[in-house]
Length: 134
Image (cartoon, rainbow, N blue to C red):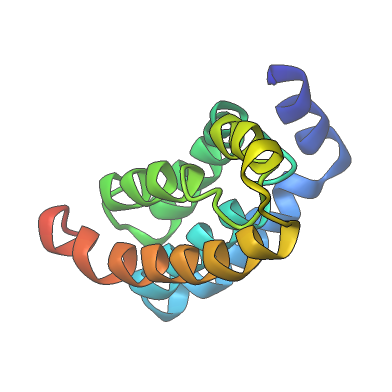
């Protein structure tokens, strides 16, 4: 996973993500938290949870330093987003084991998992800053 992070840095993808997120950070810390959550959530089916945290942790730290906010709510938001891999059965081993025996279809996970992921986003954006201040 360290190699994946190095590849993201070498190709410029990490810089692109940081630039896009940095523009949102100027608007408001909550918008930045939501953007970081959505970017991490978008990679749930492609990258494992540990690799996602390894990849996005430096982006979180750098971006929060740029806007002068505490990094703690963003790190907690990243941890929550990294475990919100609910939209597909591929992202989580338990979901992958259950889909074969249960008769679930891909759309079942997408339909309910997407709604749960949006709920996690709302809870993260509004509840996390109550406990960990910007």
